[in-house]
Image (cartoon, rainbow over all chains, first blue to last red; front, side, top):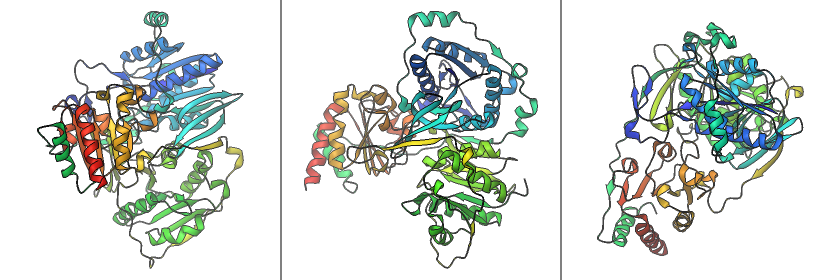
Length: 264
Length: 333
């Protein structure tokens, strides 16, 4: 079973809000110094989903990441978790792509890799969270897409997916090759194993540029972007928090309850 | 691009009625259409489509496209994408609106991929730029740390999803006139690859998190699964639900389905009681819509106090039992 997993390196979403800064002119976020980027949470779960499929069905996992050359780190980490191979897609033309541009670059890299049974993506990125790259990618590749997976199984020539819906779950099936987007409910990613960690460290991660994957300049032209960010701001929240006190915890709790009288 | 006209709402029918979110979208869609001086249309799918057409007109639609096929009675990604894409290619809507629902989250990105439009998901506001007549879509990014305004300069349709209750519902006016236009193009069954094998309703203990009027949430500060479980008593007394931060769910103190935040559920209860959680933005993104946030944390510098309305600085191990007892007393009368 050949599985391709698309992952993105993002600003750590767990940073304290005080460290979050933007450049409103450039409409970009300014990464705080000393905070290393992390793999986007859903992408890490997609990788875990791929590893579980490989545990059961054997096969090969290839990881793709668009980003700076630093993205090699997420690929090495993926290899330490259980992936076999990976490529960084890095080119000045790949910077700040919209969802269509991103999906286009991934589709060209996937076509270069060749045969595959499954493409796994996170349900959305932890930074811009557009929530559509996987679906657009599937449309470009001309394969079925199943979103919000919390369990993925191979069932003969089909993939069977348990997906999250608001009142529970759906079990759906599609013929492979298919694309599946993964939600956090699939469960925690495994910790990289010691031996694999050493192997991953030594691994050379090739970098593919636009010409390596045959990406056309017109498709990457920002002038042709489907969506553009024209404004970025940090919302001002002016909540005056009233600190309720009391001589004892019981008194503080009683004072709080009297303030909540209208609500409860 | 200039031949794309009007606003098209992708409607949803639940229990034989227009879904509340659809009525809200008709409200916002009507405003956008009026600003453009164009028509508001709605696509309704499934064999009940005809029976709610009158309602859609009363809520503001000028045109109701009905795709009355039983294959569309329940959401199927392949069939819905096909039906919506067929209609879009015919009517060329300039703007298309979806609920940020099970259907909208699955359908809109896929349809966007097929049509080559420009999609902004989970929008908090939609308006028309008076100068360019383009749709301005405002949405939270970076887990709510920032707000971005998106525009699609050339790609059409301009698409957006909105969560339920983001905007008020459209006002009903039964005097409104509109056209019902049956879609004659049938679904091509050979293009249906995805098969729904089974639907499983989740049994929830007590009130469902997303619907709860009272939510008691805990984070890293709870320390252990046994301590986390103490939140349940307060939630039960209030008739509410328990939720957790990403850390609490990752630790296994609460199931992943009860995670609140950017990578979990978004809740908007009357009262949100945050216990032993610092208030990382990724978590706050899931509870900002709450009417009243109460924070209990021993660190007075914790970010949760920046978004809370009321707070107690102290050890939850002392405060929570006291608070639970007092609320129980009050409830008892």
